[in-house]
Image (cartoon, rainbow over all chains, first blue to last red; front, side, top):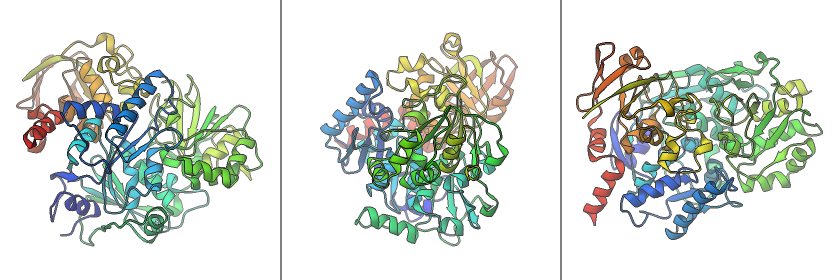
Length: 420
Length: 166
């Protein structure tokens, strides 16, 4: 019996020929990540462990992206803790305001994650990197501290669910719609403790940006990781960001899965997930007369240049609805610069949007777009839990950039086709 | 070790955003975090909770973000353990790592009511609902996790390992 891609990567990183689901391993971690919310706690634990130096300063990435640019005095103190640690430990991959992007958009762009690698991050959306054929999973601050001290992380080998996507995508349907639809099918705990192995002909022709979006939200189905077998598209992306070598893994034909989910993409319309769970996915046409106050386009889920291009296509020569605030947040400084060069920035500003520096800010109700009681937002982010973007009595509707842009123009949840 | 306290009962998918809202994540001070524990789902929790109390959730307890501040806030608020039908995986490992006992027991979770008096024997996994006169057994921890728990959490285990190595 063969192994899945996830099992192969975990075996290779724990010095084993073979691992099976349910086994515990201490895996060698190729890259470990923390941010300004999770790293300060990890640094405190690191010190409590009596550790003096990080095991490998080239394998640690620290990104000031959540409450930055510093939103208040306490956040500034948190960032300082991380900055001083990064300087003292000579951490190679440390990004501060101005150079920092949203971690999961930034690290792949910097070529820091490659197929076959093992990545942990003290951030639940670390699973994003599975799009590159890496094993990547979210952990806590103490896990990050232990990994910084020892270079390893304890992991339980997950069972895998194989999701097979077939058929051509409809107009305005992208990675976000596919993953919202999938979470709608299997539920927010449908892949609890398990791997979502994302495969099929539709994925083979899905560009990298959409793949990142899909793996990013694997956690919203409870998954330990999402992973896409590396292929020509992965190789094209890797060549564009790095010249270093790596060792990709692929699932064996006789690998074992706990179940297989088949998805016919031709049936999928642009999706929107209603409050207060990502599994409340509906075709946008079924969501009528929902007026909105704010739209956020950005985040680790949909803050890439491809996402901004889709939004700009719909916002060009149009104005945002007078009652609506649109906040556009490029995922990284490079995405921001590209948006300026391509003229997307001008389209957003002319339409009446606020164009922000990269930050996680509003996605988690931190800053840069917090909602008041009773307010309703359409967001290209990843969670619509109670109070996620602000007041516990506010509401978040999750969607892709096309639905978000169309909704910003019409002042209500709308299908992009309603604009033409 | 036996734990005893009153039940605070919640439903399925209790997420880390309601356990400790992100607006309070600009600190790592455990007492400060505990002061806002469960605020967006149960605003009176902090004034009601007493040392030793037990949180009982349904499926997928602790889903959402990786914030370790969530189990830390619960532990510091005085909660002795969390019982649920299932846990989200990052919350589960965070709880193990920081030494907040978490027990998986669907039956105990389904039958518990707010205010019930419960007793938990961590060594055996035995759960008694003293109010209802019912007893249950939680799923045992795999040996690998028992070692982390016995060491007093992951930080303690790594500390020992580093001390041995030097």
